[in-house]
Amino acid sequence: MIFFLLKLHISISISLTSDNYEEILAKNMNKSLLIEFWNTWCNHCSAFKPVWKQLSSNSSFDIIFADIDCVKNKAFCKKFPVDGYPQILFQDTTRNEFIQYDGPMTIDGIESFIYKQINFPKHTAVL
Image 1 (cartoon, rainbow, N blue to C red):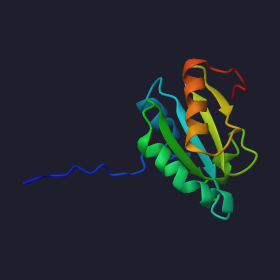
Image 2 (cartoon, helix red, strand yellow; image 1 turned 180 degrees about the vertical axis):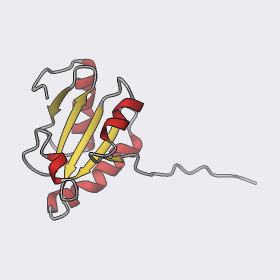
Image 3 (tube, helix red, strand yellow; image 1 turned 180 degrees about the horizontal axis):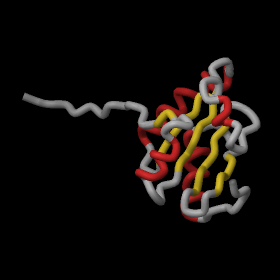
Image 4 (tube, rainbow, N blue to C red; image 1 turned 45 degrees about the vertical axis):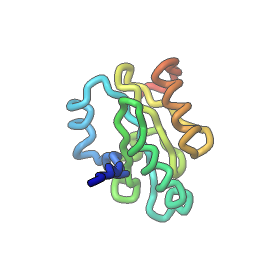
């Protein structure tokens, strides 16, 4: 009998809220986060969702993938330097810095950004 092992592609992106944010940071000390900010009415967010799911489920980077629904978490989203949707921020937890991604919304583009932040961190706004 031949058995085939299939890799399940399940998104490992965590839904962030004001209620679980600090707990996630505490449980994953020194792990950086890649956070997607999105809105339910945003067509660009809907188009980007499959890319985000594939990226978060197949990434080899040792970071936390998280997303925030800014309709349900409006006040919480205002605590971050977000000016549109979808938007991706890399949170460097060792320096408590947020670096905005401004490249193409593709897996290759975002993975390149993650690689650079891990290996050659860029210093920007501190919250």
